[in-house]
Every structure is written in C-alpha cells, then in structure tokens.
Length: 93
Image (cartoon, rainbow, N blue to C red; front, side, top):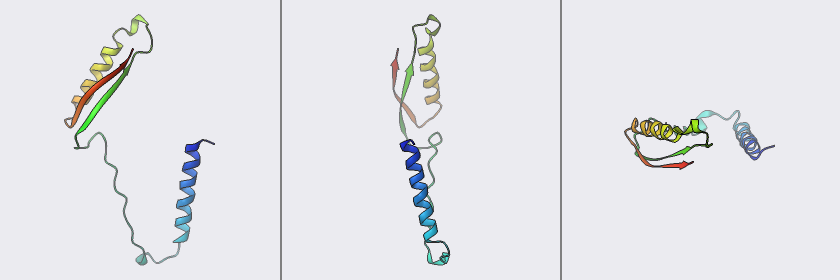
C-alpha cells in the first residue's frame, strides 16, 4: 500500500473516531467551527509571482518551434491574469 493511501486511510479513521465520540451529543453543547474556504488560485486578487517550466523532449526537427510555442502560450496565459507577474521561464532543451 502506498504511503499516500495509508495516510488517507489514517485520516479517515481519525475522523470516524471523532464522529463516533460525539454521536448522540446535543448539538447545542457543541461549537461548530466552519471550514475556511480555499482560495481559487486562478481568480485570486492576491499578487502572484509566477515561473514557467518549458521542455522540449527530443531533437526531432518537427519540434524546432516547440519551445517558442510553449513560451508564447504561457506568456499569454500569465498576461491574462492581471495580478500575476511572470518572473522567469525555465527551459530544458
């Protein structure tokens, strides 16, 4: 069994034990703390410094423009998000 699967099962077991412990308790005796909603990374208004990773996997002549296409795609993508700043493009060719 993978470590991730074991961890998920362990967390699920812990939650089950907690729920069992409070089963039948009058809800007015409990303080319910709502979960903090996760921020959507793509719609966040927080300034983000973004780096891009581009990779050309072969020397095949048909991939000659691959890096440029990736660079253009990600530059355009980052520019579509006003709170994002493109810091660098890391490339492996």
